[in-house]
Length: 175
Image 1 (cartoon, rainbow, N blue to C red):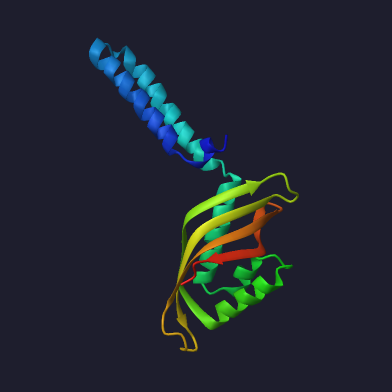
Image 2 (image 1 turned 60 degrees about the vertical axis):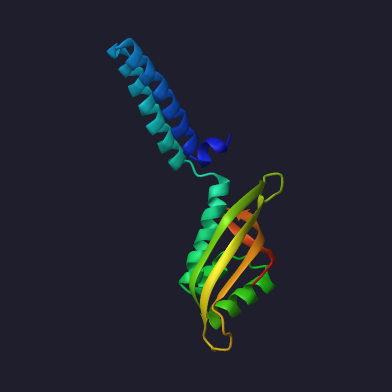
């Protein structure tokens, strides 16, 4: 059911197919009567896209959390970065503190995101796998290169209405 609320393209695709079919009927019959169903399909298509935009699924919330973490890293805002990490995840909090203090993050982004939500746990948990890329400047000028890229797998849990990093992060193929 979430597929209906996570991607507007299926609504647009179906709407275009129906409009093309109704347009063909309009063209073949030459009757303006077919304009009313075409208008109805257009209105339903617009309403469907609006509903899709208004409904925020858990996957979209996890993606927004990861985007906010990337934005906090780019702003070099340690307090904001730590607000997305569980207070019990001491090693991850220590590492995040070291990274933000040691490096000036210039760009942080991720792509090829795959999210799995587990609603059977309490609290709900999620696992996100993605490729992350960070460009930075070493404040101590000891590292000659200025980028880091890796595949990450992170675990999150739902706290109230937001998602928090649990501390379990796997890095694969770091360069």
